[in-house]
Image (tube, rainbow, N blue to C red; front, top):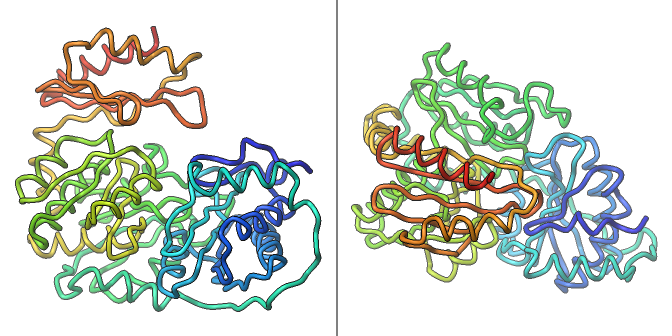
Length: 449
């Protein structure tokens, strides 16, 4: 079949199985990936979806037919693929996953040397053009170097644990929700080495996601862990998305912790360890990030949303840490890549170092910064929204780094259009709850006018 052009996204390749992506489409993409990269040896892994072995097999067949050796790292999280490429100094890698998408979806995330992500601007565009032009439709057969299998879990676990002083991890009860996704593989490698009482939820790998969809950013999908933290009287809850490159936290009172609050606390901790550290955050984030990082002697750098853009900026600035509202956290000592386990370890270390409950650490943030959360509006013409906003708030400080940021002294917001759907996304913050709610409703009325 001729591949559907819509599967080539801004950060990866993603579509419905088998209508848009299958083993044959993956084979062609594998050939085009090597043609673009010129790599001689790469790593390939896959997640737990039912279609992943077929798609991985097709991709590997395509790669080998280009004369490139494959290190098959098996069923792993996306952050484990990043680690394998960087740790073994491979020339690239790919993981078969659709991340947090429903079970009918699958896809491919690709990186070059150093676990540097391919994106729509660099790499995915060239692969798309080659595949759609039919350059790799022919199948040379099962040819090429033999596949080498490697278990990277022990090395990966040691790498993640190297980010903290394990002696500072407190002896507390922690609830872990893997959502039947890849979080359980990393967690089983790491958490038994710590003095924790673990309550495990949904650790069985199951691409049908029988308990809840694999996206903890959506409130309904984290109800189970929030309730369990309260029922167990646990001090912390940790959840992961489907491919475990994102990490989410529930505090000791059973409340969700926004990703920008996590960025603020971990950014501050990094600045206390490294004088003048640079921390990258995304355009949607709370002012808590800038305030906390600045007070600790660091520099907070605002950036476009998206892992390819955050990683690029961190490399340019030699930033030690980066965080996004969406639960992606990035580390210089992790090849600037995002990782789902390291933030969990750093939060545990922070709880031990401060000897405070997570809710106590968060109390100063929650009493000052009132967040709307990300609110999606379906609109016919997303681009028409931006001139309306700019006109209405022309007396504000306006920045057009990614969508539009409107900035007043006591409140601010970002509005962005989705890359893939007719959606407009609003994130707004004020220093009083009533003001946040009033301004939120005001901006939403303008968006939906």
